[in-house]
Length: 256
Image (tube, rainbow, N blue to C red):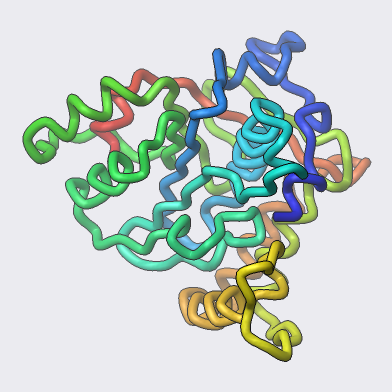
């Protein structure tokens, strides 16, 4: 759960309509009960929303500081891979593995997963709006609970953005690099099985098993494409700006 200490909300420069804004402007009225979810539909697609993921995680800890130390927990964030696995995003602390779900390509299954996890802040890739029908009452359940919905681009920038997030510390690029590194390399495996007292995923053998399983999701070409996308967004300081659109929750559910 390195994110509890690696990232803080102060490491991001938020601009709404081109004007400086606090982190809370992205996630208004964030509470200790909020849960962030992101839909991923292409290899390493979630890297295009790295700052949104990290900002949500920082606010998860800010809302209840005891989560960082007194009772350390992993953030309530969820990666929903739509159709198949698209590479482990677990370095962002989508952990344990149940927080990174591999789903069949069925919009009904996807909404079921969103509702089952109680997601309140939802990010989806820039998919077209469609005339689709969800299972009875599942759409109503989502509309009743989800507070915010966003469109992101796997490449990191959307057209006609409502806001941007720029990292202001090199730490904000750590996880994107780690995702691509672990997709290509086999890190040293812990010598023993994890115990109930294990507090970090890197010493948990099941984490290494998960990385090995997800390594088959992507190709070297996928990794190179994702790395090139990220490098193309880096400024002179080696930092990245991402852009997003805010959409109505009902609109988001038509894009699943």
